[in-house]
Image (cartoon, rainbow, N blue to C red; front, side):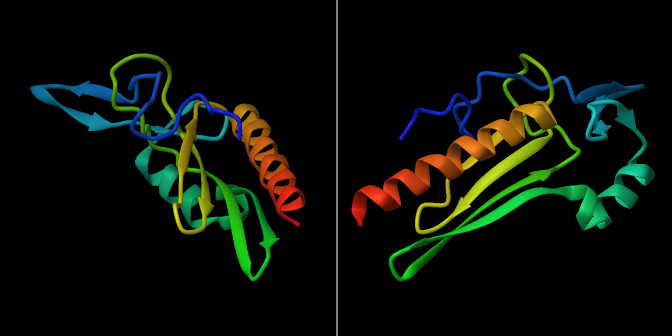
Length: 128
């Protein structure tokens, strides 16, 4: 399989999503699918809309096992390294290992989703 650029725990990007609040501390910033800042109330509306939240989901048969690949909009920055743009999309592969990858843009998330689907399908063919 291809070595993907930003699996969780090895992120090369950082958190710009944490904004300094008046009086110290930090507050979570919320983003729409275009990466524009939105209110927490608007995020809640979008987050409840599964058509908005789920970009793509595919199930691949691997023998007797089904592998689900799911790419979703999170809307909150999940980049904790302090560098780079907010990571507001996530791709997970639901199998025994359940790797998780995070992306800064919808375009990148969809491209990487397709790469993962292709890689897993190639693996299935190779094992058949």
